[in-house]
Length: 314
Image (cartoon, rainbow, N blue to C red):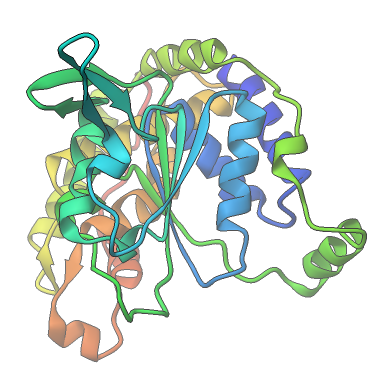
């Protein structure tokens, strides 16, 4: 079931977003793994369009929050309003109470406002005035940030980055893809809301449960732990992968196995997803950054140096 559902989502979103099959597939994978996605790329590459198309294909509730410096936590989670006729406070839910929440330009909000997402993303609930309110399921935060325009922005703290299952970059389309985009949308821009849903939210929840049943052998768990440990002991990394990161890599590998029709994880699943799942969870030391050595290059070296299980069968 996860394989068919992922294919349907990718095909639907691909009718709107041209030339990003891998990115669309990984975004759908994050949804099926109960994870959140961070898109980091320059303006105009389709980050917002992809998020809206995914929500339309899902058929769930969608809310977009435009993050700005004057945004406050209550604008996200909601607020309690006093009702004089009832002599009581009534909670008015904020836009976080949706199944897909687009946090557009998330790094333009202050750290205080960004922190309003922490409980929601990790525990799928919000607490207002001492009362806890569960969020709808499925629940996915799709955040975007522009790495070029840094004026008036606030860097996401490591604790918040760690809550994103995966970080993706759209990149520029190649010549063929861009020509196809120009031809397809010659009469106007893409309209993601025009997509017909390919599934119900209940189908996503069922697929999420099925993915958690994908088997992970002791050898694969050892492989994941060895990769995480290597980031913690690497001389060019000042902050290595957290235990939450190890769990994220395992869950993502389970999801990849499921959407490829397998009931067990292979080392190739782990290796294929490690850069996207772990890249934003490490901090490279300043000396290496000055030399032009980035996290992706270091992770690549770690993956090459880590022994791959020879018999990963569960």
